[in-house]
Image (cartoon, rainbow, N blue to C red; front, top):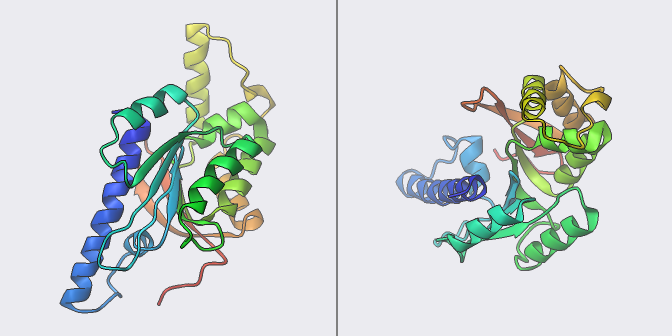
Length: 236
């Protein structure tokens, strides 16, 4: 199983489990106050997520209706994920360079068009795992800002795992030792040691997002930050 597929299936299984758990809670007490932000988010209407972008949806009916779009820039990884997809009715894999405007619009709009219950052409949840550094290295400071603007524009909720500066220096050292040529813009970057804080601040000040929870850290010691669009109403 590829990393893209592994993450996509994990999100799908979590969303469907959260939906059933929420229904069990309703049957037992009808009390929604004990649902975490994560569970309440999981039982909304539609989401993408990237390691990409994964997207999925769920309804509040008796049947679980979750749809996930898993995207990666690597066509080989997507092909492998597609061939071993055991949830083909609910999970779709597409090759996508998110920074290409025409490709992004085509892939995401086609997916959203097949789910007319989505709100204003946005995904309920977009997850970005282990990707911010690569966007930054390839596209520079403004490229990182563009990525944050574009991903926020299609998200009701955004779960993002920013890679800290130590990940950049480690990546550069590894590539240097291997003697691999690259087109990274590492030396041009002005956003450096404070990159995680810069991402958080930019999402809140320029992208109309609000940080609502830090969902712990990964085993790579990276924070998982959950943001909500300012256009999404609070649930009491």
